[in-house]
Image (tube, rainbow, N blue to C red):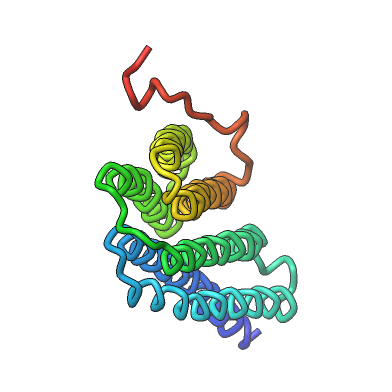
Amino acid sequence: MSEAPHTVKSYEEELKNLNANIIKMGSACEDSLGKAIQAITTRDNNIAEAVIQEDEKIDKYETLIEQQVVNLIALRQPMAIDLRETVTALKMSSDLERIGDLAKNISKRTLLLNENLPKNLVDSLNRVSTNVQKQLKSILDAYLERSAPMAVNVWESDEQIDDLTNLCMKEVIKYLKENEKNLEDGTHLLFVTKNIERIGDHTTNVAEQVYYLVKGEYLEGDRPKGTEPIVTGEK
């Protein structure tokens, strides 16, 4: 009987440590995404190289979190574990790892660009990426605060990300058509835009996981999908 308080305390400490590592991993992803966008819009290859190198740190967090989850499940009796915490952490780390990979891919494309980007493209990339960064920060805050409403807000914002992505794609296609010499850079930019959209998708995955963690049930219904007039005001 004397060991019971120690066991509970130890479990709580391990769980607290697991949660802290999720936040650290998420913060590293935020940082990588911000730097990746800064690198491509300012054509700063040094920053792009730094993002590529830092992806290893994000991968290590995923491995560490996996090990922590396995240890929590293996070393504790099932009734003593809130499985939602461990399952959510595992799923979140997988999505965050993909976000890190996509930020790295954006930076790899940056290194291949030949020309400085025109202002309209820079503005368009900044618009969509700023929204994605904001949602990534919001969902990490939601995880930290165990806030279902914040998770729902991020989930519902996916349609706006889709709209801004479509507008960015149109700008890139227009750039492609303007001059043959833009073909190579334009192709890289199409992939970059798609990567930003995929980061938004993974952020929405995390929102679903946080909602499940807090509520013990899954968000119902199809994900909101964008229609450009919502953003553009056009009819």
